[in-house]
Structure formats: C-alpha cells, structure tokens
Length: 245
Image (cartoon, rainbow, N blue to C red):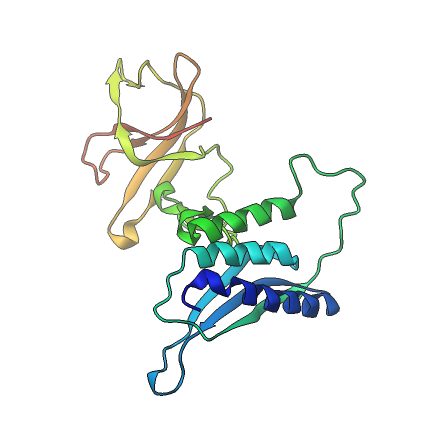
C-alpha cells in the first residue's frame, strides 16, 4: 500500500475483531493504537504508529472507524506499507445504560464525547482544548488549558468569589477620573475585594485587590488595583483583567 488511506479497509477489519473482543468481555475502549508496518529485513523501516485517545469509553465500530479515517487522511507515510496492526491500549468495564425514561435534550454525554473525539481526530489534539485550573492564586497562571480528551485535573478554586470566564491575555491599564477607575464610563465597585499576594517564590510578585465593577450600561468587568509598593511601581493603579458575560 502506497498511502495511509489505503490501509483503512484492513484497519476496519481489525477494529471489527477488536469490538467483538470488547463485547465478549463487556469492555469499552478508552485508548487504542494503529500500527502501519513497512519493509523488514536489511531495509527495515520503523512502523508508523498512531495512538487515539477517546474522551469517553466506546465500543461502537463505526465511531472508531471514523476516528481512524480522520487520522489517516492527515497522515503522510515515508514508505509503502506491508501490514497493519491494531492494539487495545486501555480499556474499562462498560457503564450500565441510562435508566432515564426521556432522552436528554441536546444529546447525551456520549453524543457530546463522540463529537469531541471526531473534532480532535480532524483538527489535532493541540487545537481542541478544555480549561484546566492550575494550583496558583494568580489568575493568569491558574488559567491553564489541556487537550480535551484528557481527564481534567481537579484543582481547588482559590476563593468562593465571582470570577469571569473571559480573562484578557494581558491586563489593560485604566484611566482614573474623580478618583474612580474609568472604562468608557466611571466604574462602580459592586463586590468585596479579593486580595492576591503570590509569585514571590519565583521573583514575580503580584499584590492585587480584585473587584467586580459595573459600568454605566450595567456591563460588569473584573478589575484590580496594584497596591502601593507592588512590582509595577510605587503608585497604585487600576487594570482591567476580565469580562463577565
């Protein structure tokens, strides 16, 4: 076989066998591999390997074939192939079916997971991500991301205070008018302060007081004030750091 897509028919046959093996043992696949093998002997070339991770365990043949098809369509092999292999790398017991009488609106979690996996196969894991909180009080550090098919890491939230879902890449310095922060209109503080002092261990100290601020048109912003003696200088200044929906 000269190109990766030509191997799909053979991979499909192996996936059918793997699904039968999973069904007999009441298992679902969470991660599997596809190996495209090249010439052996003196002119041996290392196999081309694909590893496909699923957001939710699955055992449906057509869905697994679609994932492989998307990956093969984006793959360029360096040499002709003489064989293919499929490996079940990670499995787990099949979850019992839902006992709900009515279907969930907008599709089931399994439907969402299959769509997510298809997007990852088509676009690549680096282009489909999910939020992943990091154990740090500084918002710009805590706001991490990871591939959508990986299990989220549970990190405790710093405090039970309101935080926006849209964080700016870099805080924007605000004007002050009549001793109040200004962004299109004077901003009114509508929350108690969330005080953050962190980063000193890495030489990047931040000393901030965060507030939810409301503009004249009732738009809410997340702003902070660098306190006196902070790394920004001796003057306390206001910055916009996030937007509320």
